[in-house]
Amino acid sequence: MLKNCVFEATVLAALDHLAGGTILLAAVSGGADSTAMLTALASLRCNKDFAQKSFSINVLHVEHGMRPAEESRGDALAVKKLCKTLDIPCRITSIQPGRIQKAAGEWGLGPEASARFFRMRALKREARRINAVKILTAHTHDDLLENILIRILRGAGPRGLALMPRERGKFLRPLLDLSRKDVLAYLEKKGFVFRTDSSNKETRYLRNRIRHKLIPCLDEFFPYWRSSLYSLAETQTLAADFITKEAKKQLPWKQDLDDNAGLWVKVQDFMLQTPIIQEEAVFLAHNLLAAGDSSRVLRRRSLRRLLQDFKTGKTQTGDLGPISLKKDAEKVHVTGKVTSKDSGGFEYGFGIVIDSPGSYNYKGISIKTESETENIINNQTDNQAEEVFYAQLPFVLKKWVKKDIIVKTGQKRCLSDILNREERTAYKGFITALDKEGNAAFIGLGRGKPALLYRRDSNPELPIFRVTVKNFFNGSTDV
Image (tube, rainbow, N blue to C red; front, side):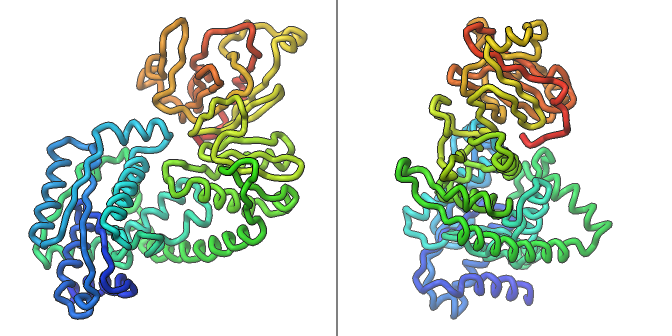
């Protein structure tokens, strides 16, 4: 009984600051965490303090269309039945099967990140429809720790390693101080059943590998890891808040009068700052331009490489996917589209734009760009065709996505047509060379060969771009 009181008291405390009559939207998947959250909300209606608030509780269940229809529909029906039992309005929204996977390929995201984008969008839309002030999600203390482990493995910066906030914008997490053990104990006492997502057992997802493989190892050999990790996140929260405050103070972005979608700061101010302040300032600009669109991912490692190239003078422009940076004599510009005028308006997955002859480095690849005339003067021939592809300036090296194809001799070829599944696993990743005529080449990153996997038909009227294979495989996996 005490555990029930503590559980519900924790949920009540998380909502206590909200005004009376607040409309709440609870995200309920049917799993243990969200079922416990909804059960607690329903039980609290009998609590005097909670009842005085006169909260309006509503539920949205998002059917992602990623699992077998029988299982997915079973979750939806279970949530609907639970809501009917608890006398809480419920709405089911279904995403067309295959849509999340397709978007993941187009955006260069994993299926989990893509699913999260669609789920968040559905929740925000439903919140607007019913005028909900807060969207409640059932993240627990275990989720908080798992997120930190994920971000450590992905090389996140201070903000990524900071504590998951209890409240951000419309979203509120009332279970953040409760563990998964607390959730299961509460449901057992209440006698409520919950659904188990079969995909939670699939270790192809990073979160599941951490949950089923890494955490048991940490529990066995480092029993105090939870408190230590939480302390690390507390420190990173303080560091991130300080860095963000300094970045806003030292590099306040201004609207670009020549481009309503762009921002700028003085180049002198920007280049005088330490690298971490520069990075944070760019991330702040990205957040302003992305306007909450979580599908537009800015990768810190790519940004760090570009800022280093700015410092050494190796390049003055760089496209990073959701945003692009350009440095001139007066300003550093950030825009939500590519800076090269003829690059076709490509939107996702940029690594580097090559818009002039010269030598470049990208993900450990040495790229030498020269015109046909220079090639002849240097007595270079096409006798090493596997190292050379042809493209127009400017061209882009970007992360390969599943929809990428190369048209050769009138036929469309994707990577699966070129390499079988076993051959593909020999590589750590793939990139695509892209110009305004389409994809020019597929390049493999890792230990396998050849590095230049496939190229478009040669065109003697186009400049030659020679790829040096010896510098390919340096262990870089930032793809």
